[in-house]
Length: 376
Ligand SMILES: Cc1cc2nc3c(=O)[nH]c(=O)nc-3n(C[C@H](O)[C@H](O)[C@H](O)COP(=O)(O)OP(=O)(O)OC[C@H]3O[C@@H](n4cnc5c(N)ncnc54)[C@H](O)[C@@H]3O)c2cc1C
Image (tube, rainbow, N blue to C red; front, side, top):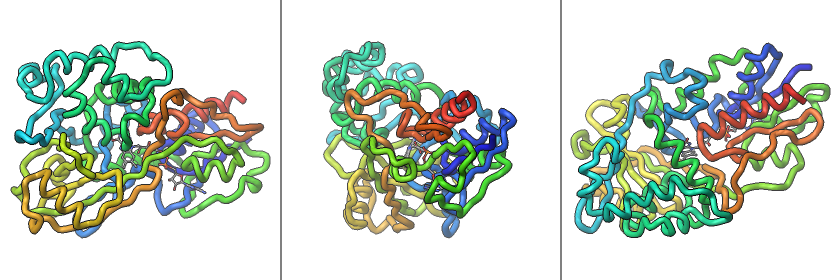
């Protein structure tokens, strides 16, 4: 029996590749003009603009499994983040690499920082939110000043909405391995995986499964399209996000670090991407990516970004704003765990909403769906 995969995001690519490697005949249908879904890059006026700011984690088990990092000219980002506080900018890094920085940073006491380890080692204790679990571990000021501002940008949601066990797994997954970006943009990851797949139809939106009678089908679209195609109803919540790309004269920002703020701000983070990967901007300018969880005006965004970096608003020129609807699934307290890929008969599904809202979660869900479809 031959196979059909609908959707060419990381989940669909992983499903199709797994089937192809198992010797099966498989055809992948992607609605848009290229593969990648949420991991795509646009090339505009000499800039590389990812469709929403994200870093690739070269240590994710599924990315290691694919042995793809050597193909994408991967540039590591800095593991230290900078926090804008009322007392100036403080740095916080991996305590294994910068033990003294961790002790002296004014962002929380040593005891509060070590409480993160207590949280990481704790057993799951029922339906409790990530915020409550981190605070119950004793993270106190460190939670307010660093963990909350930083992790809101990871989960693209307030932490009271996130299941603590799920949150712990996501945090563990990005502590291991280096984060960074391919020299040609985040989308190069999807392109490299897609290049291994023999039969991909682009610009091929599927609106009914009836035409695939007699084949095994994996629906690897976003969860809302999937529930229409599959006539299923259960869904997890999802987060929207908004990323602004601005240019600034080169040299105005020299930092390579992700910057967050301990103050209340609509922005969750900002980073000068071309300081990590120079190819992200043309000569003479720096490309800044800034992300918000709420849709603010372009003027408000400029004001906030200028505050983040202590810049003049006039130094910032808007390149493009991306509104990414349904950026990530939100697993609410009590709602984590891997859902079955099998829907009914010859029909299966894949996507990050079934596993975890990450590149690893999407790749894993595709592989699991393919394996389940081979066994059924
Ligand atoms: C702003 C942002 C930041 C992120 N940051 C990170 C990060 O730093 N680290 C991390 O690990 N993860 C991050 N993620 C999450 C990660 O990108 C996603 O979890 C993953 O890409 C989801 O892949 P997917 O295949 O499940 O879904 P998608 O990428 O949504 O793929 C679904 C595909 O199905 C196609 N499709 C839809 N309808 C049809 C149809 N009818 N017929 C055919 N095709 C169809 C779509 O065009 C799309 O290509 C981020 C995501 C966003 C948006």
